[in-house]
Length: 386
Picture 1 (cartoon, helix red, strand yellow):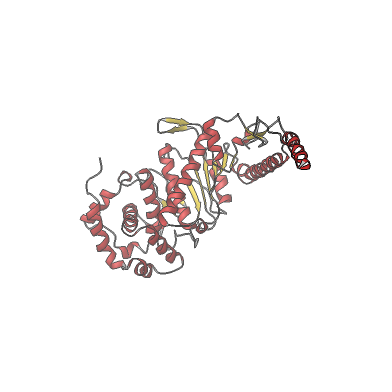
Picture 2 (cartoon, rainbow, N blue to C red; picture 1 turned 45 degrees about the vertical axis):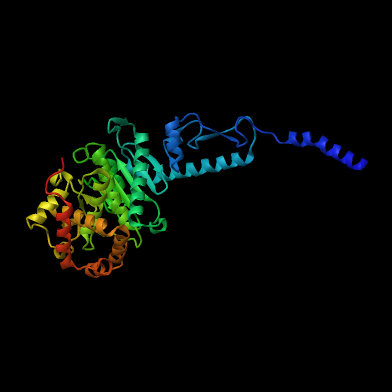
Protein backbone atom coordinates (compact mmCIF):
# COMPACT_ATOMS: atom_id res chain seq x y z
CA UNK A 1 0.00 0.00 0.00
CA UNK A 2 2.81 2.38 0.96
CA UNK A 3 4.58 1.63 -2.33
CA UNK A 4 1.40 2.34 -4.26
CA UNK A 5 1.03 5.73 -2.56
CA UNK A 6 4.63 6.62 -3.35
CA UNK A 7 4.11 5.61 -6.99
CA UNK A 8 0.98 7.75 -7.25
CA UNK A 9 2.79 10.73 -5.73
CA UNK A 10 5.63 10.27 -8.19
CA UNK A 11 3.23 10.23 -11.13
CA UNK A 12 1.45 13.37 -9.93
CA UNK A 13 4.74 15.15 -9.47
CA UNK A 14 5.73 14.31 -13.00
CA UNK A 15 2.60 15.78 -14.62
CA UNK A 16 3.61 19.48 -14.55
CA UNK A 17 6.98 18.61 -16.05
CA UNK A 18 5.38 16.67 -18.93
CA UNK A 19 2.85 19.42 -19.56
CA UNK A 20 5.59 22.01 -19.64
CA UNK A 21 7.27 20.12 -22.52
CA UNK A 22 4.29 20.93 -24.85
CA UNK A 23 4.65 24.57 -25.89
CA UNK A 24 1.62 26.19 -27.49
CA UNK A 25 2.28 29.21 -29.73
CA UNK A 26 -0.48 31.69 -29.03
CA UNK A 27 0.36 33.63 -32.18
CA UNK A 28 -0.16 30.89 -34.79
CA UNK A 29 -1.81 28.11 -32.70
CA UNK A 30 1.16 25.87 -33.56
CA UNK A 31 0.53 25.95 -37.31
CA UNK A 32 3.82 27.70 -37.94
CA UNK A 33 2.10 30.02 -40.42
CA UNK A 34 0.13 33.27 -40.41
CA UNK A 35 -2.09 34.83 -43.12
CA UNK A 36 -0.36 37.47 -45.22
CA UNK A 37 -1.91 40.84 -44.34
CA UNK A 38 -0.90 42.47 -47.62
CA UNK A 39 -4.02 41.13 -49.36
CA UNK A 40 -7.46 42.57 -48.62
CA UNK A 41 -10.06 40.20 -47.22
CA UNK A 42 -12.09 40.04 -50.43
CA UNK A 43 -9.08 39.35 -52.66
CA UNK A 44 -7.62 36.91 -50.14
CA UNK A 45 -10.76 34.78 -50.46
CA UNK A 46 -10.47 34.86 -54.26
CA UNK A 47 -6.79 33.93 -54.15
CA UNK A 48 -7.52 30.95 -51.91
CA UNK A 49 -10.08 29.70 -54.44
CA UNK A 50 -7.50 29.32 -57.25
CA UNK A 51 -4.29 27.37 -57.65
CA UNK A 52 -1.93 30.10 -58.85
CA UNK A 53 -2.21 33.83 -59.54
CA UNK A 54 0.66 35.81 -61.06
CA UNK A 55 -0.60 39.07 -59.56
CA UNK A 56 -0.60 37.60 -56.05
CA UNK A 57 2.94 36.34 -56.65
CA UNK A 58 4.09 39.93 -56.91
CA UNK A 59 3.49 40.36 -53.17
CA UNK A 60 6.87 41.17 -51.62
CA UNK A 61 5.80 39.72 -48.28
CA UNK A 62 4.45 36.27 -49.18
CA UNK A 63 5.32 35.86 -52.86
CA UNK A 64 1.80 34.62 -53.54
CA UNK A 65 1.64 31.84 -50.95
CA UNK A 66 -0.83 33.99 -48.95
CA UNK A 67 0.90 33.01 -45.71
CA UNK A 68 4.10 33.88 -43.86
CA UNK A 69 6.30 32.08 -41.40
CA UNK A 70 5.43 32.65 -37.74
CA UNK A 71 8.43 34.30 -36.08
CA UNK A 72 7.22 33.40 -32.58
CA UNK A 73 7.84 29.67 -32.96
CA UNK A 74 9.66 27.08 -35.01
CA UNK A 75 7.73 24.56 -37.09
CA UNK A 76 10.06 22.75 -39.45
CA UNK A 77 7.27 20.82 -41.18
CA UNK A 78 5.34 24.00 -42.03
CA UNK A 79 8.48 25.76 -43.18
CA UNK A 80 9.29 22.87 -45.52
CA UNK A 81 5.76 22.85 -46.95
CA UNK A 82 5.93 26.61 -47.51
CA UNK A 83 9.23 26.26 -49.34
CA UNK A 84 7.75 23.57 -51.62
CA UNK A 85 4.76 25.78 -52.40
CA UNK A 86 7.03 28.71 -53.24
CA UNK A 87 9.04 26.48 -55.58
CA UNK A 88 5.89 25.23 -57.38
CA UNK A 89 4.71 28.81 -57.84
CA UNK A 90 8.06 29.98 -59.15
CA UNK A 91 8.22 27.08 -61.63
CA UNK A 92 4.67 27.78 -62.85
CA UNK A 93 5.35 31.49 -63.30
CA UNK A 94 8.60 30.83 -65.14
CA UNK A 95 6.81 28.42 -67.46
CA UNK A 96 4.06 30.95 -68.21
CA UNK A 97 6.67 33.63 -68.93
CA UNK A 98 8.53 31.37 -71.35
CA UNK A 99 5.48 29.97 -73.16
CA UNK A 100 3.17 32.99 -73.08
CA UNK A 101 4.69 36.34 -72.12
CA UNK A 102 7.86 35.95 -74.18
CA UNK A 103 5.76 34.84 -77.16
CA UNK A 104 3.03 37.50 -76.96
CA UNK A 105 5.41 40.48 -76.86
CA UNK A 106 2.39 42.73 -76.60
CA UNK A 107 0.89 44.52 -73.63
CA UNK A 108 1.41 42.75 -70.28
CA UNK A 109 -0.61 39.68 -69.36
CA UNK A 110 -1.57 38.36 -65.95
CA UNK A 111 -2.00 34.64 -65.37
CA UNK A 112 -4.42 32.51 -63.37
CA UNK A 113 -4.71 28.77 -62.86
CA UNK A 114 -8.08 27.55 -61.59
CA UNK A 115 -9.19 23.99 -61.00
CA UNK A 116 -9.93 23.42 -64.70
CA UNK A 117 -8.52 26.37 -66.67
CA UNK A 118 -5.30 28.19 -67.47
CA UNK A 119 -6.16 31.83 -68.12
CA UNK A 120 -3.89 34.55 -69.52
CA UNK A 121 -5.59 37.92 -69.10
CA UNK A 122 -4.67 41.41 -70.27
CA UNK A 123 -8.01 43.14 -70.83
CA UNK A 124 -8.00 46.83 -69.91
CA UNK A 125 -10.03 47.91 -66.85
CA UNK A 126 -13.70 48.34 -67.75
CA UNK A 127 -17.08 48.43 -66.01
CA UNK A 128 -18.88 45.21 -65.16
CA UNK A 129 -22.41 46.41 -64.71
CA UNK A 130 -21.97 49.63 -62.77
CA UNK A 131 -18.74 48.64 -61.05
CA UNK A 132 -15.34 49.25 -62.63
CA UNK A 133 -12.99 46.29 -62.37
CA UNK A 134 -9.23 46.67 -62.47
CA UNK A 135 -7.31 44.01 -64.38
CA UNK A 136 -6.42 41.76 -61.44
CA UNK A 137 -9.93 41.35 -59.94
CA UNK A 138 -11.38 41.18 -63.48
CA UNK A 139 -9.10 38.23 -64.21
CA UNK A 140 -10.48 36.45 -61.14
CA UNK A 141 -14.01 37.29 -62.31
CA UNK A 142 -13.34 35.59 -65.64
CA UNK A 143 -11.76 32.65 -63.87
CA UNK A 144 -14.99 32.30 -61.89
CA UNK A 145 -17.10 32.70 -65.03
CA UNK A 146 -15.16 29.96 -66.81
CA UNK A 147 -15.57 27.59 -63.88
CA UNK A 148 -19.29 28.43 -63.66
CA UNK A 149 -19.72 27.66 -67.35
CA UNK A 150 -17.96 24.32 -66.96
CA UNK A 151 -20.10 23.45 -63.93
CA UNK A 152 -23.30 24.28 -65.86
CA UNK A 153 -22.05 22.25 -68.84
CA UNK A 154 -21.27 19.19 -66.71
CA UNK A 155 -24.55 19.45 -64.79
CA UNK A 156 -26.63 19.78 -67.96
CA UNK A 157 -25.12 16.74 -69.63
CA UNK A 158 -24.66 14.62 -66.51
CA UNK A 159 -20.94 14.35 -67.33
CA UNK A 160 -18.17 13.23 -64.97
CA UNK A 161 -14.85 15.04 -64.45
CA UNK A 162 -12.94 12.22 -66.09
CA UNK A 163 -14.79 12.83 -69.36
CA UNK A 164 -12.95 16.11 -69.92
CA UNK A 165 -9.23 16.01 -70.69
CA UNK A 166 -6.88 18.32 -68.80
CA UNK A 167 -7.12 22.06 -68.29
CA UNK A 168 -8.62 24.18 -71.01
CA UNK A 169 -6.55 27.20 -72.01
CA UNK A 170 -7.97 30.69 -72.57
CA UNK A 171 -5.89 33.69 -73.67
CA UNK A 172 -7.48 37.15 -73.51
CA UNK A 173 -5.38 40.02 -74.86
CA UNK A 174 -6.24 43.69 -75.07
CA UNK A 175 -4.11 44.25 -78.18
CA UNK A 176 -4.01 42.64 -81.59
CA UNK A 177 -0.23 42.20 -81.51
CA UNK A 178 -0.41 39.81 -78.58
CA UNK A 179 -3.14 37.83 -80.35
CA UNK A 180 -1.20 37.64 -83.62
CA UNK A 181 1.95 36.45 -81.88
CA UNK A 182 0.30 34.03 -79.47
CA UNK A 183 -2.35 32.32 -81.58
CA UNK A 184 -0.10 30.35 -83.97
CA UNK A 185 1.96 29.02 -81.05
CA UNK A 186 -0.68 28.14 -78.47
CA UNK A 187 -3.03 26.60 -81.06
CA UNK A 188 -0.13 24.73 -82.69
CA UNK A 189 -0.25 26.44 -86.05
CA UNK A 190 -3.83 27.63 -86.58
CA UNK A 191 -2.71 31.21 -87.12
CA UNK A 192 -3.68 34.62 -85.85
CA UNK A 193 -3.97 37.16 -88.65
CA UNK A 194 -6.74 39.70 -88.11
CA UNK A 195 -9.08 37.28 -86.36
CA UNK A 196 -10.76 38.28 -83.13
CA UNK A 197 -10.34 34.73 -81.85
CA UNK A 198 -8.76 31.42 -82.82
CA UNK A 199 -9.60 28.01 -81.35
CA UNK A 200 -8.00 24.60 -81.19
CA UNK A 201 -10.68 22.05 -80.30
CA UNK A 202 -10.41 18.44 -79.16
CA UNK A 203 -7.77 17.08 -76.78
CA UNK A 204 -5.82 20.34 -77.19
CA UNK A 205 -8.45 22.88 -76.12
CA UNK A 206 -7.35 26.49 -76.59
CA UNK A 207 -9.13 29.77 -77.23
CA UNK A 208 -6.91 32.77 -78.01
CA UNK A 209 -8.57 36.16 -78.58
CA UNK A 210 -8.22 39.91 -78.29
CA UNK A 211 -10.81 42.53 -77.38
CA UNK A 212 -11.48 44.05 -80.79
CA UNK A 213 -13.25 47.32 -79.89
CA UNK A 214 -15.94 47.25 -82.59
CA UNK A 215 -17.30 43.74 -82.05
CA UNK A 216 -16.45 43.50 -78.33
CA UNK A 217 -16.94 47.04 -77.00
CA UNK A 218 -17.71 46.16 -73.37
CA UNK A 219 -17.72 43.45 -70.74
CA UNK A 220 -21.16 42.17 -71.72
CA UNK A 221 -20.05 41.46 -75.29
CA UNK A 222 -16.72 40.06 -74.11
CA UNK A 223 -18.44 37.72 -71.66
CA UNK A 224 -20.75 36.35 -74.35
CA UNK A 225 -17.77 35.80 -76.63
CA UNK A 226 -15.96 33.81 -73.95
CA UNK A 227 -19.09 31.76 -73.19
CA UNK A 228 -19.70 30.91 -76.85
CA UNK A 229 -16.15 29.92 -77.66
CA UNK A 230 -15.38 28.12 -74.41
CA UNK A 231 -18.54 26.07 -74.92
CA UNK A 232 -17.04 24.94 -78.23
CA UNK A 233 -13.93 23.84 -76.32
CA UNK A 234 -15.94 21.97 -73.70
CA UNK A 235 -18.16 20.15 -76.20
CA UNK A 236 -15.23 19.08 -78.39
CA UNK A 237 -13.05 18.14 -75.42
CA UNK A 238 -15.78 15.94 -73.92
CA UNK A 239 -14.85 12.30 -74.45
CA UNK A 240 -14.45 11.09 -77.09
CA UNK A 241 -12.52 14.29 -77.85
CA UNK A 242 -13.02 15.52 -81.41
CA UNK A 243 -13.46 18.84 -83.21
CA UNK A 244 -16.83 19.21 -84.95
CA UNK A 245 -16.62 22.21 -87.27
CA UNK A 246 -15.90 20.15 -90.42
CA UNK A 247 -17.93 17.02 -89.61
CA UNK A 248 -21.21 18.16 -91.24
CA UNK A 249 -22.76 18.87 -87.85
CA UNK A 250 -22.52 22.66 -87.82
CA UNK A 251 -26.03 22.84 -86.34
CA UNK A 252 -24.74 21.00 -83.25
CA UNK A 253 -21.40 22.80 -83.07
CA UNK A 254 -22.89 26.31 -83.27
CA UNK A 255 -26.35 25.62 -81.88
CA UNK A 256 -25.03 24.30 -78.57
CA UNK A 257 -22.68 27.29 -78.08
CA UNK A 258 -25.51 29.69 -78.93
CA UNK A 259 -27.70 27.88 -76.41
CA UNK A 260 -25.24 28.60 -73.59
CA UNK A 261 -24.88 32.23 -74.71
CA UNK A 262 -28.65 32.56 -74.41
CA UNK A 263 -28.85 30.67 -71.12
CA UNK A 264 -26.21 32.73 -69.33
CA UNK A 265 -26.62 36.17 -70.94
CA UNK A 266 -29.98 36.16 -72.73
CA UNK A 267 -28.56 36.90 -76.19
CA UNK A 268 -26.63 35.24 -79.03
CA UNK A 269 -24.15 37.54 -80.77
CA UNK A 270 -21.24 35.31 -81.79
CA UNK A 271 -20.76 33.49 -85.07
CA UNK A 272 -17.87 31.16 -85.85
CA UNK A 273 -16.24 30.69 -89.21
CA UNK A 274 -14.26 27.51 -88.57
CA UNK A 275 -11.63 28.63 -86.02
CA UNK A 276 -12.03 32.33 -86.83
CA UNK A 277 -14.66 34.58 -85.30
CA UNK A 278 -16.43 36.55 -88.01
CA UNK A 279 -15.35 40.16 -88.30
CA UNK A 280 -17.58 43.21 -88.59
CA UNK A 281 -20.93 43.98 -87.06
CA UNK A 282 -22.27 40.45 -87.47
CA UNK A 283 -25.71 40.23 -85.93
CA UNK A 284 -29.11 38.63 -86.46
CA UNK A 285 -32.32 40.03 -84.98
CA UNK A 286 -30.49 41.62 -82.05
CA UNK A 287 -29.40 38.25 -80.68
CA UNK A 288 -32.85 37.27 -79.40
CA UNK A 289 -33.92 34.43 -81.63
CA UNK A 290 -37.05 32.71 -80.33
CA UNK A 291 -39.51 35.10 -81.94
CA UNK A 292 -37.66 35.15 -85.30
CA UNK A 293 -37.55 31.34 -85.35
CA UNK A 294 -41.28 31.21 -84.64
CA UNK A 295 -41.93 33.54 -87.57
CA UNK A 296 -39.66 31.41 -89.78
CA UNK A 297 -41.81 28.40 -88.87
CA UNK A 298 -45.06 30.29 -89.55
CA UNK A 299 -43.79 31.55 -92.91
CA UNK A 300 -42.36 28.19 -93.98
CA UNK A 301 -38.82 29.58 -94.15
CA UNK A 302 -36.98 26.94 -92.09
CA UNK A 303 -34.21 25.00 -93.80
CA UNK A 304 -35.17 21.34 -93.93
CA UNK A 305 -33.32 19.34 -91.31
CA UNK A 306 -32.04 16.96 -94.00
CA UNK A 307 -30.31 19.92 -95.69
CA UNK A 308 -29.19 21.64 -92.47
CA UNK A 309 -27.65 18.44 -91.13
CA UNK A 310 -25.20 18.31 -94.05
CA UNK A 311 -23.63 21.71 -93.40
CA UNK A 312 -20.33 22.44 -91.70
CA UNK A 313 -20.03 25.26 -89.20
CA UNK A 314 -18.68 27.74 -91.75
CA UNK A 315 -21.58 27.05 -94.15
CA UNK A 316 -24.40 28.25 -91.88
CA UNK A 317 -26.08 31.56 -92.67
CA UNK A 318 -27.63 33.78 -89.99
CA UNK A 319 -31.14 32.25 -90.06
CA UNK A 320 -29.59 28.77 -89.90
CA UNK A 321 -27.62 29.79 -86.81
CA UNK A 322 -30.90 30.78 -85.16
CA UNK A 323 -32.57 27.57 -86.31
CA UNK A 324 -29.63 25.54 -84.94
CA UNK A 325 -30.00 27.26 -81.56
CA UNK A 326 -33.71 26.44 -81.50
CA UNK A 327 -33.11 22.80 -82.46
CA UNK A 328 -30.71 22.40 -79.54
CA UNK A 329 -33.20 24.20 -77.28
CA UNK A 330 -35.87 21.70 -78.35
CA UNK A 331 -33.68 18.62 -77.82
CA UNK A 332 -32.45 19.78 -74.40
CA UNK A 333 -35.85 20.99 -73.19
CA UNK A 334 -37.84 17.96 -74.30
CA UNK A 335 -35.31 15.16 -73.97
CA UNK A 336 -32.70 16.46 -71.49
CA UNK A 337 -28.94 16.85 -71.43
CA UNK A 338 -27.86 13.24 -70.75
CA UNK A 339 -29.59 12.05 -73.95
CA UNK A 340 -27.87 14.81 -75.89
CA UNK A 341 -24.53 13.68 -74.43
CA UNK A 342 -25.22 10.15 -75.69
CA UNK A 343 -26.20 11.56 -79.09
CA UNK A 344 -23.07 13.69 -79.48
CA UNK A 345 -20.93 10.76 -78.33
CA UNK A 346 -22.34 8.67 -81.18
CA UNK A 347 -21.72 11.47 -83.68
CA UNK A 348 -18.11 11.79 -82.53
CA UNK A 349 -17.68 8.04 -82.80
CA UNK A 350 -18.59 8.26 -86.49
CA UNK A 351 -22.25 7.22 -86.47
CA UNK A 352 -24.37 8.92 -89.14
CA UNK A 353 -26.74 11.62 -87.86
CA UNK A 354 -29.82 9.69 -89.02
CA UNK A 355 -28.69 6.58 -87.14
CA UNK A 356 -27.84 8.50 -83.96
CA UNK A 357 -31.22 10.27 -84.08
CA UNK A 358 -33.02 6.95 -84.41
CA UNK A 359 -31.01 5.33 -81.60
CA UNK A 360 -31.30 8.17 -79.08
CA UNK A 361 -34.45 10.11 -80.00
CA UNK A 362 -36.43 7.51 -81.96
CA UNK A 363 -36.90 9.94 -84.84
CA UNK A 364 -35.65 10.57 -88.37
CA UNK A 365 -34.37 13.59 -90.32
CA UNK A 366 -37.70 13.75 -92.16
CA UNK A 367 -39.87 13.48 -89.03
CA UNK A 368 -37.87 16.12 -87.17
CA UNK A 369 -39.19 18.94 -89.34
CA UNK A 370 -42.77 18.37 -88.17
CA UNK A 371 -41.85 17.54 -84.55
CA UNK A 372 -39.65 20.61 -84.21
CA UNK A 373 -42.09 23.02 -85.88
CA UNK A 374 -44.94 21.79 -83.66
CA UNK A 375 -42.83 22.38 -80.55
CA UNK A 376 -41.76 25.85 -81.67
CA UNK A 377 -45.38 26.88 -82.25
CA UNK A 378 -46.30 25.69 -78.76
CA UNK A 379 -43.33 27.31 -76.99
CA UNK A 380 -42.07 30.36 -78.93
CA UNK A 381 -44.13 33.53 -79.29
CA UNK A 382 -43.96 35.40 -82.61
CA UNK A 383 -43.86 38.64 -80.64
CA UNK A 384 -40.53 40.15 -79.64
CA UNK A 385 -39.93 40.20 -75.86
CA UNK A 386 -40.22 43.61 -74.29
